[in-house]
Amino acid sequence: MLSKISFLSLMGPLRSVDIYQSLWLIIEGMVGILIVMLLIYLVVIWVNKIMNKIEMSIDKNR
Amino acid sequence: MGSFSFITQALGEITLPMVIMWVIGILLIWLALAKDFEPALLLPMGFGAILVNIPHTGVLGDNGILQWLYHAGIEASEALPLLLFVGIGAMIDFGPLLSNPKMLFFGGAAQFGIFVTVLISVLLGFELKDALSIGVIGAADGPTAILVSQKLASNYKGAITVAAYSYMALVPIIQPFAIKLVTTEQERKIRMKYNPQGVSKTIKIIFPIAVTLIAGMIAPDSVGLVGMLMFGNLIRECGKLDSLSETAQGPLANIITIFLGITISFQMQARQFLSWGTVIAIFLGLFAFIFDTIGGVVVAKLMNIFLPEDKKINPMIGGAGISAFPMSARVIQKMALKEDCQNHIIMHAVGANVAGQIGSVVAGGIILSIAHGFGL
Image 1 (cartoon, helix red, strand yellow):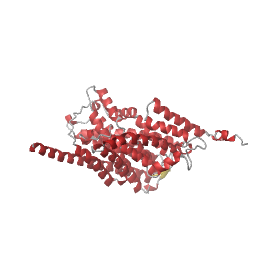
Image 2: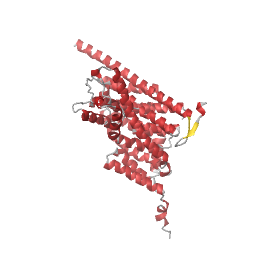
Image 3: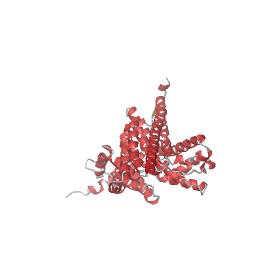
Image 4: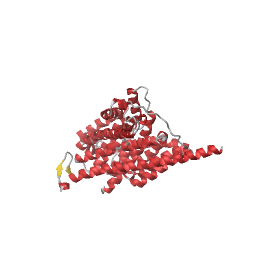
């Protein structure tokens, strides 16, 4: 029933379902960005660790 | 003998909206030259606004150069903004970010303003495609704003582009205001040690490939944006293509910039541009920038709750996570020095700022993916 409420806003009609969609959009968008940044972060940390190990073993062999 | 009516034909068809657009064009040129507001884009846009608002102008119509450039360079495949990203990618050094990778989270947090602005736009009654496009002003990235508004067929493409580039130039005014709203003097004085990890050439080569794959898996619509940015960066970092890197950073970026600025003015014809929606959209862009800054700062403050005293983050670093590089990093450094003349946080700020470059293109791609989910 709540989704059927609508009123006229400054630039056009606004339904309550539009508000829910936008709120959900904020969550989806920020979670999506966070997931991408987290994955990139983990890849950077992991590759840095591997490269450090390789460099240490090269130094040891010298 | 013919009449001389052709001399006065155009004069007789000048309308008030056209004259207003001439004034707006001259204003943009003035901002570019006198105030140094992104002159590379605002000057061509300002001049183009005059060109497209002359009666019976030869730059429009089927054989008009601006119409052709717009259809071929933007409408058909968004080629111009995407190719510009190749040049931008070749200019970016991700070293400060790779040596301090937790700055990535500020690059993500500082895109918060995009989504808040989408909500505000929806509440004001804008259609969802326009709300999403207006929100992308907060990406603080001109090509992203152009591309997203074009792909979503927004009714306010011209306004969104003008707003994106104008507010990027206003970062030194907007950010200090927003940061002071949500921080205390004590927080702004927090000193941070800079202990960078070493950054190998290998990781600098793997990084652009990994970012493209990760972003592409989560938000396939971001591949165009992220892919071109990372392609340019890969050319720079691979070490074998110095001449291509120099070409991308220099001639390519300059040529595309020349064409992009003047082509965008196709959207600045009076009948499309002059509306209350344009005024409100431009105003909403300011909110996007403010909430971007607040989003980054608040995330830094939240992280500080869990960090020991000697490892706390100066929350202003969060504000550097917007895409306006390198201006935002410089603004943050200046604010830090103003509070404490010994507090040098520039390298942290640069790390967050380049992370914002990634965050903004990822955000643009996510907006497009979400829009597809809504059938746009």
